[in-house]
Image (cartoon, rainbow, N blue to C red; front, side):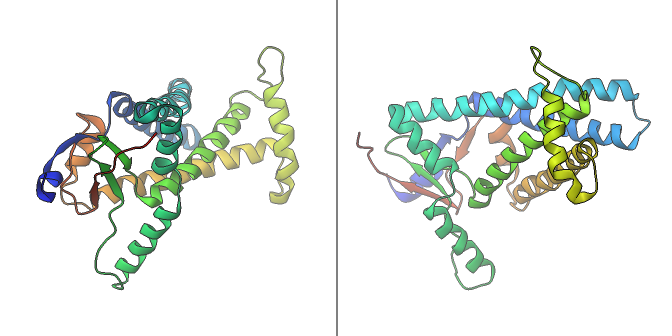
Length: 253
């Protein structure tokens, strides 16, 4: 197969699990940000009660999406690529910022400042196996770690804000969290509950910033709809982008 033929081949970038994961994640994030700000600022768009209920409905959607569907997608993809070894390789090359990503990111910086002519190919598709070796922009791999930590923090601060004496099977989770926050809060001249509220709001603004960066990075491409179509609709992608590298390497098990 010629290089041009390789580049115009249609492949599956996202399977149905990944497309639904993106969809649920996007909906949950947008609704949580809107209802959270609605509760904080007291907007008149809906009642406080309705905003709070909608906020609480979206919490498990986001948690299940990020802590269940995402791991399932990683495991299923990796298993198809070669069992346990395939899972490890898929996770490492696909989601961990590694030396190859550092090299690509360095090249991107050099390209931005005119010190390197070619923008690095950061999406690598292996036509021999029919799988992507890596899909994500190096910066997105860093964002994944930061976002995961922020989702965890906004979740535990949300527990305290939901109910200060919330417990499960008799375990006073919210009380313990408030005590932990109380160890840190004096730095900002706050008590534990005030710190939880402050951190929850700060993380909300971070997610707004991340959403803008994540979406508008895609908007810089003149053929932006192909990304939205692939992520949310059919999962298909043409390997015709200058940032896509097509390799032909047999996997050895």
